[in-house]
Image 1 (cartoon, helix red, strand yellow):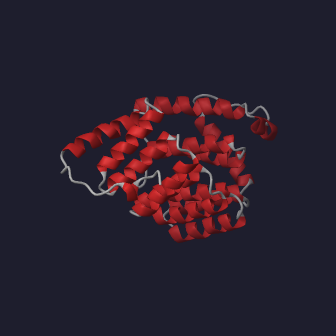
Image 2: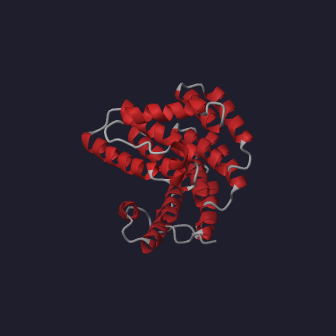
Image 3: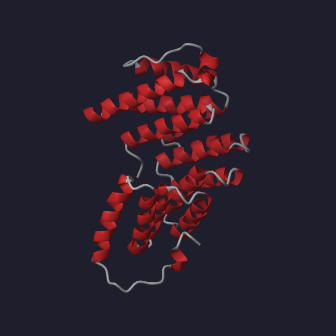
Length: 267
């Protein structure tokens, strides 16, 4: 199923932050515009809306003080409570860049949003072909497919990203997530093993690996992975909750279990 508007909002906002950190101002602005559009066009609970506004404003201040932004636009400030004006400004930038990567990604997104999947695939395929050495573009396309619940398309885009950059954990993690969503659990597990070899200290990777082995009907091994995650970060709340859930589940199962070696991410 596609993500909820609240989850999509934070996906877009977090993606904007990631792109700014990488120095990709155009991709940052596109994702920020999409986050603002989600906020304006959907109804949210008051408590969620307050947090969203604070998070938007905090990022807005960070963005407008960034060197790249200042060089490109000068002292164009973000004003609290005037998101529609921000969106108009960002949309103008996208019109200016209509024929470039920035604009084509927007065109592809528009086709996805309108349900024209074949045209979206065509546009996104062209964008990735035009940016053969840019893993970030393929990653962005994969995320757009993921947002719509198009797991196979997401997998294909993430594999293109991995072919360009096979050492970035975010790419490996997203590919494994798409594989898990497709039910390709063995393939997802192999990608997580690879990611954990790159960074064995990342609690989120152990958590996501636990989700895969749990789907493989191995709550016992999932518990071991979650306990490892919590040794890396004892304050990892999602890991704590998942661990409690699985421990309760395991108590209801027979003690006799198959060998764990073939599933271990430490191989």
